[in-house]
Amino acid sequence: MRLIQFYREFSRLSEYTHSLTLLFARFAIAYGFYDPAMMKWNDLDAVAEWFGSMGIPFPLLSAYLAASMETAGVVLLILGLFTRFISIPLIIVMIVAIFTVHLHNGFSAGNNGFEIPLYFMLFLFIFFSQGAGRFSLDRLFFDKK
Image 1 (spheres, helix red, strand yellow):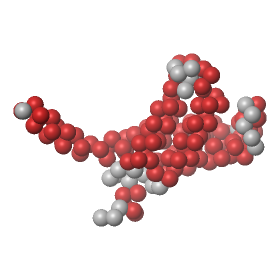
Image 2 (tube, helix red, strand yellow; image 1 turned 60 degrees about the horizontal axis):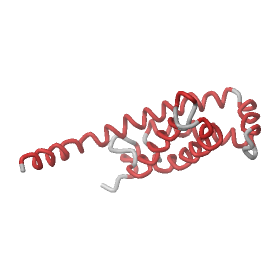
Image 3 (cartoon, rainbow, N blue to C red; image 1 turned 90 degrees about the horizontal axis):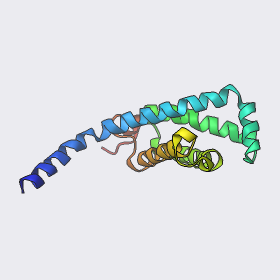
Image 4 (tube, rainbow, N blue to C red; image 1 turned 90 degrees about the vertical axis):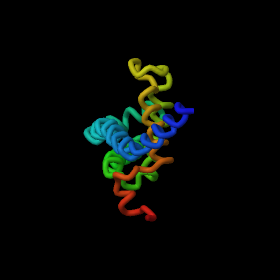
């Protein structure tokens, strides 16, 4: 009985870390999108050529869209602004990355597998379902309270 009470109290107290956890997760995922976005912007023609070699339709447009979504994702995730909205195109970017680049390499990140994009996608689903948390512009602008 005491264990159950202890666990309930422990669970109640741990809920106070919810927004801080979302904040740190947003920063980590934003950081993870930063380098790929900048690499795309630094040589869009090469990215478009690479996309074309993989059979991605409209490779230059796709390169612009991917770079734009990743860049917007970095900014919006850091700010916690439109977090649920930006999660959707970023999830799509991760799905495309998994199926066009990583899947044939297996799961392991060490072999350029789909492990890291899968983790990013899972975090983005968390942001989609949970929002940005208390420490965000979403809360400031859109909270009903």
